Length: 102
Image (cartoon, rainbow, N blue to C red):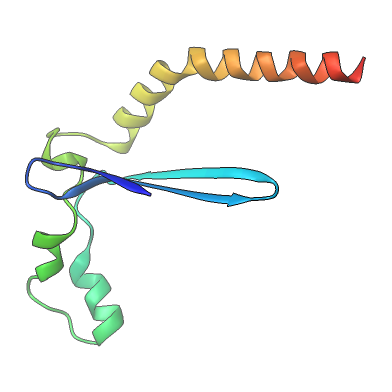
């Protein structure tokens, strides 16, 4: 488990893992914008606060560092950056599977 924080300590990325006899599952979550803490408090407490204390304590979101970031811009940039590695990894795993089947 881990986190990547901004300069003020707000969470930008959360990391987790789960191990089992089948292997290891890794997951990561990237916060693009602030978490809607007021809505979450309403769900838990039945009252809609004007401002949630959790907003200051827990998370920031990528938008606090990169103004104008959108999901489309981020996914496009990530795909462009990761595509060569993903294709290479897929081709390598496919060739291993073919070799093992032979």
